[in-house]
Length: 85
Image 1 (cartoon, rainbow, N blue to C red):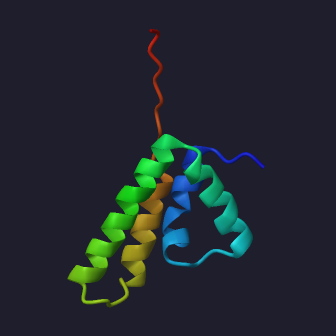
Image 2: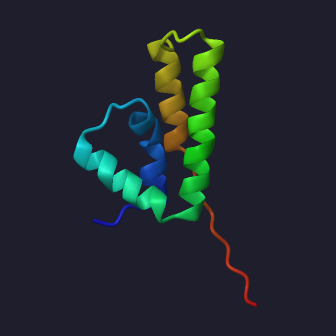
Image 3: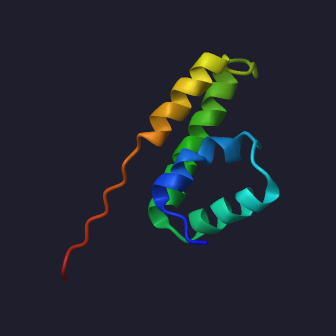
């Protein structure tokens, strides 16, 4: 099953939080490993998650914040441009 980048990025936080099943994790990881824009986005999200964890003292974010962040990620649009050489 082919995943598009917007679907992968919408579920990145579930993957980072360990909230998806093994099958979903494997599909997301396969896409991320083979897609440069998603590798970059995943790396940024992973760094943001670590930063938030450090600054919040390891506390879990309030559910309202998690819902707002999830909504914002679902609104992400990826635009890929190609230049002719």
